[in-house]
Image 1 (tube, rainbow, N blue to C red):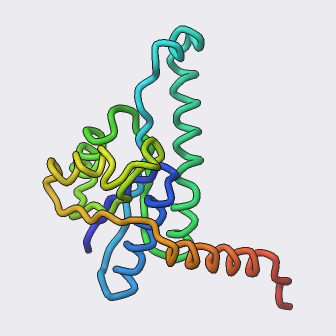
Image 2 (cartoon, rainbow, N blue to C red; image 1 turned 45 degrees about the vertical axis):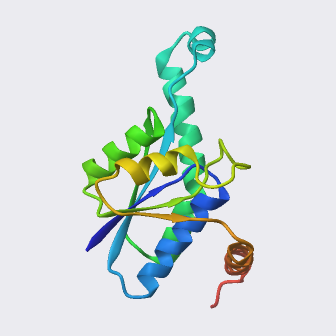
Length: 167
Protein backbone atom coordinates (compact mmCIF):
# COMPACT_ATOMS: atom_id res chain seq x y z
CA UNK A 1 0.00 0.00 0.00
CA UNK A 2 1.31 3.44 -0.94
CA UNK A 3 1.78 6.10 1.74
CA UNK A 4 1.05 9.69 0.68
CA UNK A 5 2.31 12.72 2.62
CA UNK A 6 -0.18 15.60 2.64
CA UNK A 7 1.28 18.85 4.05
CA UNK A 8 -1.58 20.91 5.51
CA UNK A 9 -1.32 24.61 6.32
CA UNK A 10 -4.95 25.71 6.14
CA UNK A 11 -4.69 27.05 2.59
CA UNK A 12 -7.24 26.28 -0.14
CA UNK A 13 -4.42 24.66 -2.16
CA UNK A 14 -3.66 22.24 0.71
CA UNK A 15 -7.28 21.05 0.88
CA UNK A 16 -7.33 20.76 -2.91
CA UNK A 17 -4.32 18.44 -2.54
CA UNK A 18 -6.26 16.27 -0.07
CA UNK A 19 -9.17 16.06 -2.51
CA UNK A 20 -6.75 15.15 -5.32
CA UNK A 21 -5.28 12.33 -3.21
CA UNK A 22 -8.81 11.09 -2.49
CA UNK A 23 -9.55 11.05 -6.23
CA UNK A 24 -6.41 8.95 -6.77
CA UNK A 25 -7.75 6.42 -4.28
CA UNK A 26 -11.20 6.49 -5.89
CA UNK A 27 -9.45 5.70 -9.19
CA UNK A 28 -7.95 2.54 -7.70
CA UNK A 29 -4.73 3.57 -5.93
CA UNK A 30 -4.32 1.65 -2.67
CA UNK A 31 -3.06 4.31 -0.28
CA UNK A 32 -3.02 5.60 3.24
CA UNK A 33 -2.42 9.23 4.10
CA UNK A 34 -0.07 11.05 6.43
CA UNK A 35 -1.20 14.59 7.26
CA UNK A 36 1.38 16.99 8.64
CA UNK A 37 1.31 20.59 9.75
CA UNK A 38 4.62 22.36 10.31
CA UNK A 39 4.69 25.16 12.85
CA UNK A 40 7.60 27.55 12.28
CA UNK A 41 10.00 28.17 15.17
CA UNK A 42 8.96 30.69 17.81
CA UNK A 43 10.02 34.27 17.24
CA UNK A 44 12.16 36.11 19.78
CA UNK A 45 9.07 38.13 20.74
CA UNK A 46 7.09 34.94 21.45
CA UNK A 47 9.91 33.52 23.55
CA UNK A 48 10.33 36.75 25.55
CA UNK A 49 6.60 37.28 26.17
CA UNK A 50 5.66 33.66 26.92
CA UNK A 51 8.63 32.97 29.24
CA UNK A 52 7.80 29.27 28.98
CA UNK A 53 8.79 26.96 26.15
CA UNK A 54 6.04 24.50 27.11
CA UNK A 55 3.36 27.19 26.71
CA UNK A 56 4.67 28.06 23.25
CA UNK A 57 4.68 24.37 22.31
CA UNK A 58 1.09 23.90 23.52
CA UNK A 59 -0.12 26.92 21.56
CA UNK A 60 1.65 25.75 18.39
CA UNK A 61 0.36 22.18 18.74
CA UNK A 62 -3.17 23.49 19.20
CA UNK A 63 -2.86 25.78 16.19
CA UNK A 64 -1.52 22.93 14.07
CA UNK A 65 -4.30 20.59 15.17
CA UNK A 66 -6.88 23.24 14.24
CA UNK A 67 -5.36 23.59 10.77
CA UNK A 68 -5.36 19.80 10.29
CA UNK A 69 -9.05 19.41 11.28
CA UNK A 70 -10.66 20.09 7.85
CA UNK A 71 -8.31 17.64 6.10
CA UNK A 72 -8.88 15.05 8.83
CA UNK A 73 -12.64 15.45 8.36
CA UNK A 74 -12.31 14.76 4.62
CA UNK A 75 -10.26 11.63 5.27
CA UNK A 76 -12.55 10.43 8.04
CA UNK A 77 -15.55 10.79 5.71
CA UNK A 78 -13.70 8.77 3.06
CA UNK A 79 -12.96 5.90 5.45
CA UNK A 80 -9.28 5.81 4.47
CA UNK A 81 -6.54 5.03 6.98
CA UNK A 82 -4.53 8.11 7.95
CA UNK A 83 -2.17 9.50 10.54
CA UNK A 84 -1.51 13.11 11.42
CA UNK A 85 1.21 15.03 13.18
CA UNK A 86 2.09 18.61 14.09
CA UNK A 87 5.83 19.28 14.00
CA UNK A 88 7.94 22.35 14.64
CA UNK A 89 10.70 23.70 12.46
CA UNK A 90 11.31 25.03 8.97
CA UNK A 91 8.63 23.64 6.61
CA UNK A 92 10.70 22.25 3.74
CA UNK A 93 13.24 20.60 6.05
CA UNK A 94 10.58 19.17 8.36
CA UNK A 95 8.46 17.83 5.49
CA UNK A 96 11.44 15.86 4.14
CA UNK A 97 12.11 14.53 7.63
CA UNK A 98 8.46 13.52 8.18
CA UNK A 99 8.17 11.78 4.80
CA UNK A 100 11.31 9.78 5.58
CA UNK A 101 10.17 8.95 9.14
CA UNK A 102 6.79 7.67 7.93
CA UNK A 103 8.19 5.92 4.86
CA UNK A 104 6.04 7.95 2.45
CA UNK A 105 6.13 7.02 -1.23
CA UNK A 106 4.95 10.36 -2.58
CA UNK A 107 3.90 13.89 -1.62
CA UNK A 108 0.71 15.58 -2.76
CA UNK A 109 0.75 19.23 -1.76
CA UNK A 110 -0.72 22.62 -2.54
CA UNK A 111 1.08 24.97 -4.90
CA UNK A 112 1.05 27.85 -2.42
CA UNK A 113 0.59 28.04 1.32
CA UNK A 114 -1.04 30.51 3.65
CA UNK A 115 2.16 32.56 3.90
CA UNK A 116 2.12 33.31 0.15
CA UNK A 117 -1.53 33.29 -0.98
CA UNK A 118 -1.14 35.97 -3.63
CA UNK A 119 2.11 34.69 -5.11
CA UNK A 120 2.20 33.69 -8.74
CA UNK A 121 3.59 30.28 -9.55
CA UNK A 122 4.77 27.96 -6.82
CA UNK A 123 5.34 28.82 -3.20
CA UNK A 124 8.76 28.47 -1.65
CA UNK A 125 7.93 25.22 0.20
CA UNK A 126 6.56 23.55 -2.94
CA UNK A 127 9.66 24.63 -4.87
CA UNK A 128 11.95 23.29 -2.13
CA UNK A 129 10.17 19.93 -2.04
CA UNK A 130 10.26 19.61 -5.83
CA UNK A 131 14.00 20.19 -5.65
CA UNK A 132 14.91 18.10 -2.61
CA UNK A 133 12.28 15.40 -2.10
CA UNK A 134 13.54 11.82 -2.45
CA UNK A 135 10.04 10.78 -3.61
CA UNK A 136 7.72 12.09 -6.35
CA UNK A 137 5.86 15.33 -5.59
CA UNK A 138 2.49 16.25 -7.09
CA UNK A 139 1.62 19.94 -6.79
CA UNK A 140 -2.08 20.86 -6.80
CA UNK A 141 -3.68 24.24 -7.34
CA UNK A 142 -7.03 25.25 -5.89
CA UNK A 143 -9.53 26.13 -8.62
CA UNK A 144 -13.17 27.16 -8.87
CA UNK A 145 -14.11 23.57 -9.69
CA UNK A 146 -12.54 22.57 -6.39
CA UNK A 147 -14.55 25.29 -4.66
CA UNK A 148 -17.80 23.89 -6.06
CA UNK A 149 -16.75 20.40 -4.95
CA UNK A 150 -15.92 21.71 -1.47
CA UNK A 151 -19.29 23.46 -1.18
CA UNK A 152 -21.09 20.27 -2.24
CA UNK A 153 -19.13 18.29 0.41
CA UNK A 154 -19.99 20.86 3.08
CA UNK A 155 -23.67 20.70 2.13
CA UNK A 156 -23.72 16.90 2.25
CA UNK A 157 -21.89 16.85 5.60
CA UNK A 158 -24.31 19.35 7.12
CA UNK A 159 -27.29 17.45 5.67
CA UNK A 160 -26.12 14.16 7.17
CA UNK A 161 -25.30 15.83 10.49
CA UNK A 162 -28.75 17.38 10.73
CA UNK A 163 -30.72 14.41 9.39
CA UNK A 164 -32.98 12.79 12.00
CA UNK A 165 -32.00 9.33 13.11
CA UNK A 166 -34.02 6.48 11.66
CA UNK A 167 -35.85 4.38 14.09
